[in-house]
Image 1 (cartoon, one colour):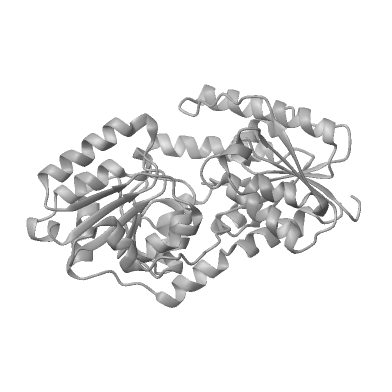
Image 2 (cartoon, rainbow, N blue to C red):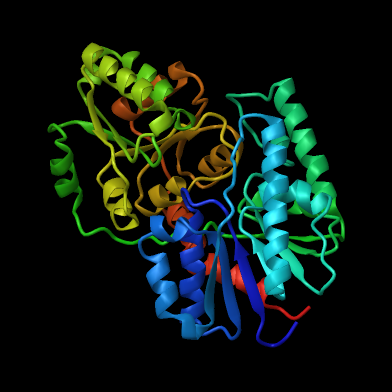
Length: 411
C-alpha cells in the first residue's frame, strides 16, 4: 500500500445510523488532513436523503473525498433466510464490480453482517486489496452474559451456531484484514474463533453528543407535558422491534394512581408499514388509561436528540431481543438519564456493567410495568460517573480514529 492510501467505504443502506457514520468518517478525514483518497460507494438516493453529507463531499473534494453513486437497486428481504442469502450475494456482486473498476488499497464494508456469504465464497480479487468490515451483531459470546430475565430458545441457539460457522468461513477470505466490532465484549471470542485469519478490533460506537439549543422545560412545553408527570421517552424509529406494543400494554397494567403520574412520549418517525396498527394501539391506550400519551411523529435531526433526552426522566430501550448496541443507550448515559431497557444481549450487559439503569425482560409487558412502578415510586439507581465514562468512550473521534488507524496502515 502506498503512503497515501486509497480507502473505499461501502454501504448500500441509507437508514438509521448508516449515512451518519459515513459523514463522521469524512469529517474526521478532512479535520485530521489524512493524506490519500477516501472514496464512498453508496446508493444514489442516499445523497438525497441525508441533507449534509453531499454538500460536505462537494466542498472538500480537494481533501481527497470522492463519491461514486451505486445505481443498482438492492432488493431487501430480511424476513426469510433465503432472502438474506440473496441479499448478501447481490451486495457482494455489486461490491466486486465497483472495486474492480476503482482498484483501491483498502475497502471497508460498513455493514459486514450482510456480506459474509460473499466473503466466504466468491469475493476474490486478482489485484492487491485488503478488506475490513464492521460487524454489528456478534452473538458468539451471548451465552456468557448474565441475563436473569430471559433464556435462549433452541431456535436462537441454532441461529447463533449458524452465525458462528458463517463468520469462521468469512474470516478465511484472504483479503480480509480487520473485523471491527461495536461490541467490545465479543472481540476476544471472535479472535479465539477465527484464529490468525483476521484480527478483531473493538470499535467505539461513534456518537456526536451535540448539546441541543432547547432547554428541558422548553421541550416539555412543546410536547405539552402536564405538570407533575414523569416523562418516559422512547425515541428513534417507532416500530414493533422497539417494543412499542409491549410498552403500551405495560402502562395499562399500572395502578391508576401511577398512571396519573406518567407521561409516555414516542418521538421519531412511525414505521410506515405498521403505522395503522401503532396508531390504533396508541389511541386505544390513551382511551383506557390515565397516562398522558404524546406522539412526536417526525424525523428527528441529530441536533435535537440530546435536548429531547435531557427533557425526559427515563429512557425506554424496549427492543425485542435486539442483538448489538443502541446509540440511545450512549445518548442517555451522556445526559445522565436513567434507562429502562432490555436485559437480553449486549444492551442488558451494558446497562448492568455501567450502572445505566434497570434491565428487564422487555418482551413481557408485566416486566416493563414492574420497572415503571419502581421508577414512579422509588426511582432508579445509576452510576453517574460510569455513565459519563461510557458515553465519552464512544465519542465520534474515538470511532473514526480507531478505524482509520488500522485501515490506512501499510500492508
